[in-house]
Image (cartoon, rainbow, N blue to C red):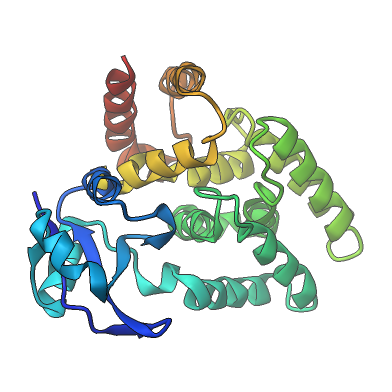
Amino acid sequence: MAVLIDPPSWPAHGTVFSHLVSTSSLEELHSFAVAAGIPRRAFDEDHYDVPARRYRDLVHQGAEEVSGADLVRALIASGLRVPARRRGPKLRAALSARWASLLPEAPALGAELLDRWAEPHRRYHTQTHLLAVLEALDQLLEPADEPLRKAVLFGAWFHDAVYDGAAGEDERSSADLAVERLTGQADAVVVQEVERLVLLTVTHDPGPGDRAGQLLCDADLSVLAGAPQDYGRYTLAIREEYAHIPEEEFMTGRRAVLERLLGLRPLYRTAAAQGGWTERARTNLMQELLSLE
C-alpha cells in the first residue's frame, strides 16, 4: 500500500503538474490528499493533479517518487485506473456513437441526454455509469432479445436522465422525459415500454416473465459485482452525491438500501448475470453493510 507521485511534467495553467495515485484504494488516496491539503477539485477519476510547487512537500509527507511509466503501471495493476474511453471527450464520443446506432435521426436528443448525464452535481449517475450499463447490456442481450432490444436500450439512456437525488421522484421525472422526448421518434408501444422500464428501476424487482425488465435491472445493478476497487469507487461516489445528507441519516438510508438489495431473491434475474455476478455482488454488499455497523 502506497501513494505514488511522478515528476511534474504535465503542462497546464502556466505550470507543470504531477500525478498522485494510490496502489491500493481511493480511500487511501483521498485520505492522503485531505491530510496534505489538496482540494477535491484536483481529483480526476483515478488520480490527483498537483502543481510542481507541491512536489517536494508531498514527497516529504510520504508520497513515493516514481517515473511516469511506473506510476501508470502501478495504477493499472491496482485495478483503479479509469480507461481513457471512460473519460471526457472520448467517453462522450463513445456514447454518441452508441446513440447514433440506436436513433440516428435524432442527434439533438442524444446530445441533450449526454448533457444531462454530465451535469456537474452528479458523482455516480454520470456518463460513466451510462456506459457501464450499456456495456453490461452488451453482455446480457441475446439474439432472441432482438424484439426487446430497442426499448431496453432506450430505458438505459433515460433511466437516470433526471437526477436530483430524490429517490422515486427522479425515476418518475425520467420516465416522463422519455415519454415526452420519444413520442414521435419511436413507436407508441416502444415509448410505453420505455416508461415502464424506467419506473421499474425504482425497485429493481421485475416479474419472473419480464425479460426486458430483467435485462435493464441487471445491467443497472452490474456495478454491485465489480472488483473491490471498483465497488469502493462506486460507494465513494454515492456518498458524494448525497453529501448534503448528514452522516448518520445517510448511513441509516444506505443500510436500508443494502438490506433491500440483499433481500432480493434472486438479486439478478437473467441467467448470465446470476452465474457471473451474484457471488461477487453479495460479497460486496455484505462487506459494505458490515462496515456501516
